[in-house]
Length: 268
Image (tube, rainbow, N blue to C red; front, top):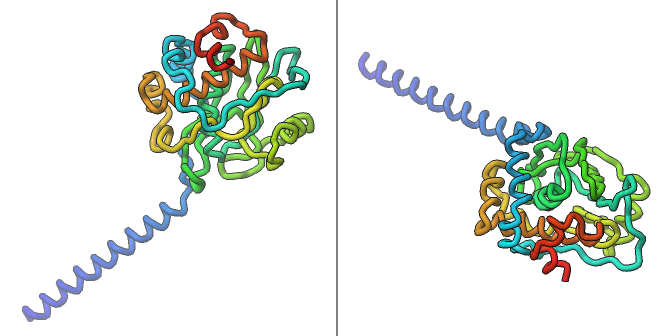
C-alpha cells in the first residue's frame, strides 16, 4: 500500500508539471501572436509633453550647443530654379511618410521640434513604428489628423500607411509630382520632405537605433533636453538642419530663430 501511494503521488506531480508546461507554452504562443502595438498609439499627446517639447524647441542655448550634432545621415539638399512652394499663400513644407516606417519615426521628432520654432501643433498623436520591421516599435508621433498653425509657414503632412501597413492617406497629384521630381532614385523612398522647393530631404536624417530604441516618449523628451546625450545630438541636430532649411525658404523670419548662430552656420 505504501508503494502504491508513493507511485500515485509521483504520477500526480508529473501530471501537474506537464499541465504547467502546457499553460506556459499556450501563454507564450498567445503573446507571440497578439497585437504588440503600444496602447498609446493614436492617443493625443498630453499637454505636459507638448509644453516640454516646445520649451526644448525654443531653447536657443541648447540649439547653439548642439549645432548639427550627429544628424548628418541625409540632410536637406539645395534646390535651384524652382518656384517657391506655397500652401495657403505661405511658404510651404511637404512631408510624405508612413506610420510604420522607423526612419520616418526618427525624422518626425526633429521635424516637430523645428516646426515648433515657427508655430504650434494641434491634435498631434503618439505613434510607434511597425513592431515587425527593423527598429520595432520606435516611439514617435503621427501627422495624421494633426493641424499646424504659423504666421510664417504652412505645413502639409501625409502619412500614407498605418503602422500595420494599411492604407491611410493618399498623396494628391501635386504631392506625388513633387516627390517624383526631387527623388533622383525614382523609388519614392520615405521620409520625403520638400522645404518650399528650396531644400529637399529624402531619407532619414539619423538612424533610430541607439537613439530611440528601447525608450518611451518621456525618456526621449527628457534626454533630448540635455545637449550631451545622443538623443539631443540626433534630434536637436536634425531639428537645427531643418530649421536652417525653413529659414532659407521664408526670408529668414522670424529673426529670433533665423539669426541664431547655428542657423547661419548651417546655411553657409
